[in-house]
Amino acid sequence: MSGHAPRDPSDPRDLVVVALSGVQRFITESRTTADLRSASQIVAHLAVKAVRHLHDTHKARIVFPSLSEGRVRGADDGMPNRIVALVPTGQGPDAASATSEHLTEVWEGWVAEVFGQPMHSVPGWPVVQWVSVPAAVGPYPDQWREAQRALAERKTVRDFAQPWDEPEELCTLSPRWRSVSPPDAVEKRRKHMAGENLAVANWVKRLWHRETCTGRSPGFASTNALASAPYRAEVLRLWEEDADIADAVGDLRLCAEELGDDPVSELPLERLPRVADSEEADWVRGRGSRWVFPASWHLDALAREFERDRADPAFARTVHEGWEAASRLVEIMARHKVDPLSPHLAVLVQDLDSMGRHLSGRRTHPDREPLEVDEESHSDISRLLSQVAADQRAAIDAAGGVVVYAGGDDLLALVPAATALEAARACQETIPPSLPTASTGLLFFHHGSSLGQALGRSRDLLDLAKERPGKYALGVGFVRHSGAHAHCVLPWSADPAPDEALRVFLPGGKYARIRLSPRLLGDLAAEAPHLDGGDAELRTRDQDVLPPAVARAEIRRLILRHTVLGSDAENRPVEADREGFARRAAAHLEHLSPEGRLVDEDAVRIALFLRQEAS
Image (tube, rainbow, N blue to C red; front, side, top):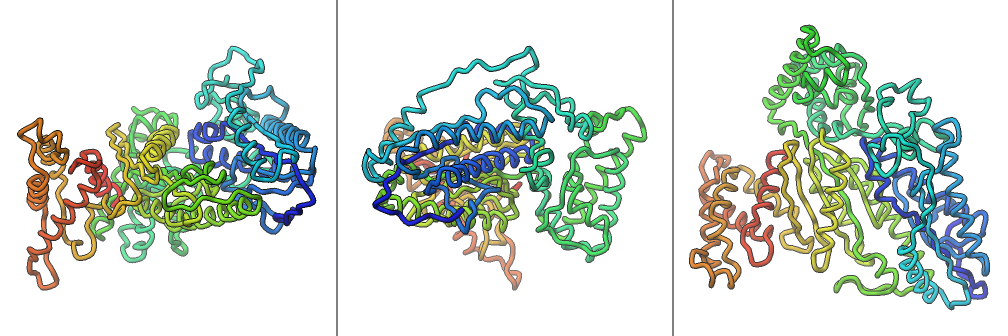
């Protein structure tokens, strides 16, 4: 395929828009990170197939997505689920319809590869919607407006084909579908999957990398691997400095192997340090990712997973010794002042605000100029989005995370807790002023929690960010394994930026030796009825509410009360630093609060969580 051909005014063309519907639902209905990655790549490759079919078979000029040197950029980790093309006059409806049929055939081919035979169609996947606007409507801007109107109307239309059905169990990932018997590939080689009740589409998702000719890159970091990556990096960095580390990891490995065959495969994260001639170091880079957590050594959970008798003394002893080895490793790393092992990681989602309005030439933000709607400007936007996607992949990689998909206009990634805020900020900075602003959802969650629920909550945070006036916001929250949770929404345009304000419990620079006690949260919560006096109407109704100036002074007093000061190089306490820190911390707390308030308890809980789990 070639790139964007120059527009020929004497060659009027039909405008065709082909869209894959239900993509977010298909991707987020995933149990594992491998499912998540497969679903993303399935969508990306369907989009690539649509582009190639339109370009090669129907001689289309592709406007979206960007083509570069004969290739569709982002084919493996991010593609827009909407294709915009210009086809020869009069051929638009036939080209769009044929492309839709082609995608159905591609999907059915993957189904046949996974199951070894054709299967009944999956109702509701893939759903391909298209519109075609004839050249007679007018120039490209007129065609684009008509296409947007037609797409909006098309969304209100539903197909009600009678699907095949049998009285089987509902799919555990997508209960709108019935489950089917596992493919032979599962029965023969992957017995740990055989007990799962999955629909056809989800079996394809689960096995697409291994059982189809198109699938690739079977390895994808698990939630265990990402949560423990910063800790394991420090373990490997200190490997040759402290022999106790190798001893503890060696004991950990022996216990893990004594449990039996581990059904969870784990490829090493390439960014982790390497240690020459050490099998134990190689093991902790890869399969050891979950065993470094002491909490992974749970007798009942491991008995179920490895089908062992929890009453067997040898098995119980192995589990206990594994817990001891993991705990000993934590203690050794603490001696080296390594941050505690956090069981949390983060889902990062980002989406450009009002992209449809921008492409239609309407202003999306007071600071962003509206776009001139024509083929050339849309082609430029397409290329720009490809560059943004590449920059975001680099930013996520630098943060030690992994990209699920990055299409330029939207992003989904998994990132270690310790670097999640930096990753969110870095991805924001990839958006140039010529594009709309972007909103972000960032959810911290436990590596043993449901991935599907974490994905859903992260999308909820993104929706909350977009509901804020002006959008351009960060919705951030956490969910502990116990179920405790909190969230808040902060504008990216604030000064200080939300990622800086949320570090109120993690002071740096000249305040690095200051420690702010978590007990501050209790005092702020107890005093909240008196401190939240920023609202004038509230002050007139409640005489116990302090005026704003007095409330700010009281907040600074509480911060000073819970501030512990270290010493400078000459071992002399610097009281002025405590005062300066208290003023800055009080200002950060106010920035984390909604307008008219001085303290938002949920925002303080998130800041405290970051200190405890993402330092």
